[in-house]
Image (cartoon, rainbow, N blue to C red; front, side, top):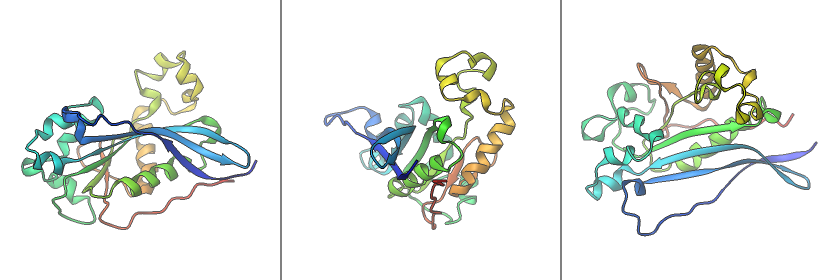
Length: 216
């Protein structure tokens, strides 16, 4: 089975006269695609948010209200302090040091179907997203969360269609151990944990790793 590379497939639709705080959040949702010799196959899904804090400040909008637009983004507000500087514990783990560039790229979600796991496809896709969409951002952030615990314990989810289709029953059922494994995995992209939080951050001010996937 010959395939060449990983593609990210998505489309955007923007309301031109949007007045809601969420207009400062660029949301990208789409599919991870493998290109075969004679067809393409969707092998995963992703979602990222780019939060334009600087424009909100210039427009005298409430930055809190922007992060409060979605449940997925609200928690990241805790990484800031007064003046919209990143908290000291955040800056401490950023190799590039202090900066006032408050825009944030959030890598919110990455799923790869069971058939294509273990080849680095998810890392390759995330690496592309962090390189392409961290321009103008002072930080890249994520909250590693084992998908087998989404919406309840694995035992409670076992009969759900999506849980079965994504093969989540094969994953570790110990939450702490599964989360630690994810943190090590995302560490390959330059992410480090912010002490005392559930979040990991990577620094767009330093050279990023370049991740290729293993075509086998």
